[in-house]
Length: 94
Image (cartoon, rainbow, N blue to C red; front, side, top):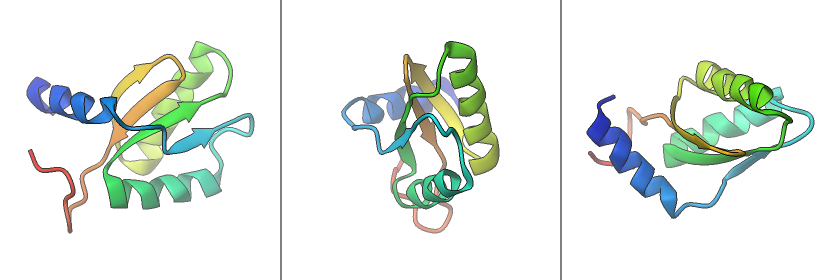
């Protein structure tokens, strides 16, 4: 993904509220299912991570991107923004 698209997605994500909260139990199968459904519907999600220190948050972000086939757009503090394009009915037009 090029710089211009990343900047556009960051600008869209700025006004959004976190859609999914990941807490002390971490990334469970139920959370992954909800992430898959939400990414299909919205494409761009903010995720609030309450899982510990920076290294643990980085690992959870990597796991989300791997398991959901998503792209990490940005990570600021405890909040990560991910994107996955919906192939059938795209919501975000570039």
